[in-house]
Image 1 (cartoon, helix red, strand yellow):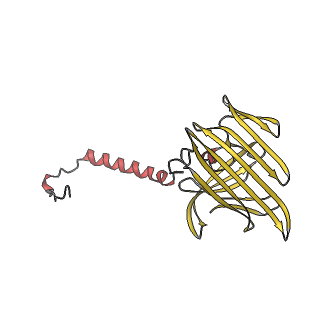
Image 2: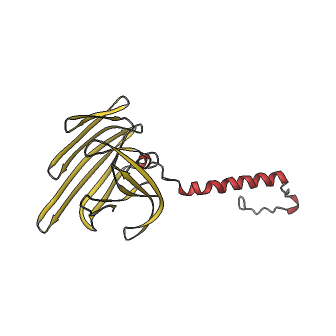
Image 3: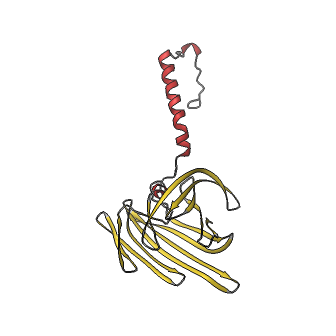
Length: 242
């Protein structure tokens, strides 16, 4: 139906596909079917996250230990001309009765321009021990200090703040707390439905092993929705998007 009028096609006027046309169509269909699995599992799919330029806004997470809440994390994305800023805040407090057994506070600011990390600053109170990282781009390097000690990294390194889509392709990540190289291996475990926010959500599951060990779940747009790892005391820590 075109323009509100019915058009009638006479069968006699429709040319039958010749052998060449049929063969070409069959080859096109086979090629399309061969590509289909890759199209279905491509990750991430959303513009912005895919380009490592996330939409402006804040993601808030709950942190639990053995299923009990112990803290919170927020990751805020602020657009800034040709780049953007990422602010991460983490607060954890583990107690028993009225006693505080462990306290952790971490604040970090990542500055990105033209797809590259051009500055990174973090301050951490690790249960009374102060840790500070201050880095800025110098040529093709990222240079600065950790607790006044000089540090130097390749300019393309990605912080292990885990939001960046390049995290799952990296072999080395920047420790945002101690300002060190961390060698890692990442395994794609495929799509997985997980419990989330009173229901379920389809995710892509990745495992990071090596000098950092994390289980990561991203939604199909590439947004980090869950992190799980084992603390050195054997307890399970989980970070979940609210």
